[in-house]
Image 1 (cartoon, each protein chain N blue to C red):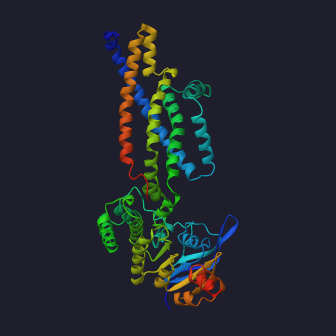
Image 2: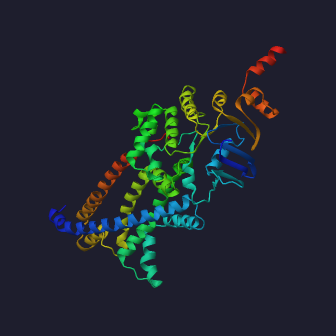
Image 3: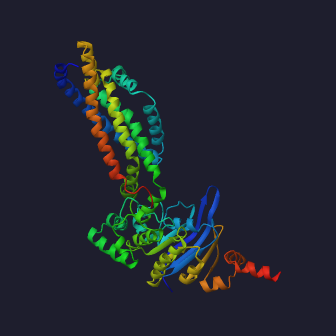
Length: 255
Length: 219
């Protein structure tokens, strides 16, 4: 039995009167890649933001290794260091060079010496093919490069779990690949990851388990092959149908 | 223009320019401190204090400095607070400038997307570290042109100091005109000295703006 790393119990998040997340129970095990799918507005991104305590929650608990993640916790910065997050819009710091973007948090939050942090940053940049861009500013990079830097910036904190919030949604198609390859490489290393994405092929390739979220609830949970080939629920079938254009053509031909 | 008169007045103007610069600098530094506090209180929506800060900004920006100085100079003694003219001048300038500085800084802070702060927090930085290393550098960069404009504006506003018997540049010029009718020479020196103070400030400001404009935009 693998060890439970992240545990979410009965999570409720309300926003402006309505419930965005309506009783989520979810456990992420060590070394597991969990992909969260769902139509827009289903609460996927909100769920990731709650895990990082960026959103106040109304009920339920979120804990990492048994330690509760709460917005009022004095320990929150230390817990957040263990939860790496990568945003759709990259959110690099525009006033800092690539190298400083990456080393800011290890130096300030973890009090690691500059030399050591920079050495690790350069090694990680090398892994994602961006070592020669260390001195550049974010504005000089393409979207795909920015996102790879953002991933490195999360990795250098040695997080126990990584959260990816639609990290390729803002990218031009030809840049999606370079970012997804980095994430696939992380999966091969056995990293624990929670991935929100709209890239179905990628989801199928990377996921150990797929969760479908709709109207703030988990409606289906299955291994990727099962989920994509034999979805159990009607909701999952409908969701997958909206993504394939093939079905529409077949219907037209039969008529 | 009588050159001997110019030479005779020069030391007087130099002395009063020094006073203008000294009080002006103190007032502006205080205004910056007030501005930072008010901007922070309003940006982070601190209950109660944000209302006070908002009211202060409106009062300070919508009343003339002359009125503020009269209030301090003639009003406070009536309330039993003794004030000397220099303290009045600095306090008045700080009161006026604080409102302007607060708004310049606040607009800079609000120009930084909130998700930048979230990104910093998600990396495990404490809120104070996130403000110091991520929010403020970007906010100051956006605010710099407005802050520089405020500094120049406040230095010019010191010309009202003469109204509370401070011997600033304006006071000296008016005094000499009144005493010796040396109108042309006095006004000439007045303009020259204001320019001597303000042109370097202006140039320094442009330099600062260029140094701090790191990116334009693009996260």
